[in-house]
Image (cartoon, rainbow, N blue to C red):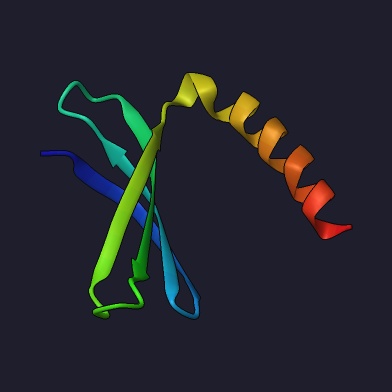
Length: 73
């Protein structure tokens, strides 16, 4: 199981986002972003996540910032 190094939470109404920096058993750190949201029909939570490794974080950040600017217009 991965060791959790740091965690931040962002509550956005029916959705909650978790930004967790974890360390794999190999010692390699990574970022896991999890979305937890209510499903309207039965009010159960649905979760999904993505994992971003250190070698990809700069490109991820560039693309994220680029599309965030488009949404902010």
